[in-house]
Image 1 (spheres, rainbow, N blue to C red):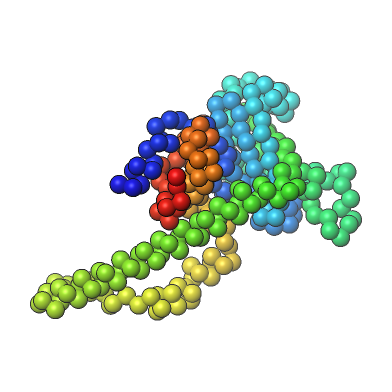
Image 2 (cartoon, rainbow, N blue to C red):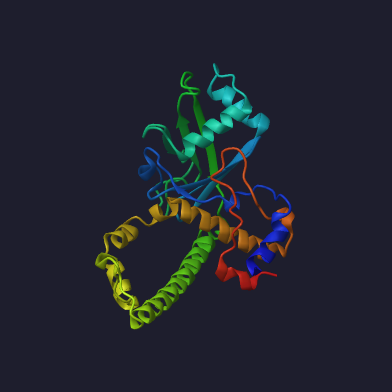
Amino acid sequence: ELFFVMAVPWRRREGRPCLDAQPWRPLRAVAEQSASGGELMVKSLFTEDGYHVMLTDLGRVWEESLEGDAIVARTKALNRSVDAPLSTVLEHLSTHLHNPPSPNTLHLVTNDDDHDTSREDSRPGEEGMTLVITAKLSSRLPFRWEFELVRADVSGEALVSHLVKPVLGMVSELWHRQEHLFKLLAQKDREIADYKDNGATVSRRHLETPVFNETAFLNQMLTSKEFQLASAEPLEGLSCQSSQELYRDIVLADRWNTHKGDVEDVPTGATVGTAGTWTGRIPTSLLPSLP
């Protein structure tokens, strides 16, 4: 009941689409390692008349925001034989950015021609990145697009607000959920023990489970293949749907707190080509802090 009361005010009115709430995804691009020197992630918001794309190598952030006539002009400049509606171009870009059909669809190029790359502290991409999409439009026409990404995190605020803070919030919420599940398991074990004390038995022996041991469970997880994979490839966990939904929920709760109920600034949906829509769920552990 508390959740319902808290969620209703901002759900009554449609908020503006917002890049903040769009989840990060690993970027599947050719030459991404040589171009940036590390793992890359991308997030985007595609609306009816434009897009906002953000790229990170977990240390720096690049972005580009483009709309309407500027998109049409770039389309013509890069594809003289293509005459497609803006909506078709945007849908094409959104689809191929996050779900490239082949390894050769995406290519990343650094814009370091005028940058002194001989310095010891210099890294590729200091002057910007160009993310290139090469894929046929409507399965017939050759099509090329260039996202001209510029540095967006000179002060470091972009990395903190779009990645560090939301991910830390996700860790906190997942810990809360784990603790809650441990308590539920303990209650279930007591319930089962009570049934057995009163003569109840399991009809099929293979359905019987041992009493849950939290310490043994945590030790088992530390030695699992999934734990080794998570430590070696931590970004993969952010690509699953449940992680992306939690990311959006964390950002939603944070923005709701920050704006003190100003629903016009709280994103509740997404439009053409976005990574998804708001689920309308505020993490349980964040509810007490809401106004």
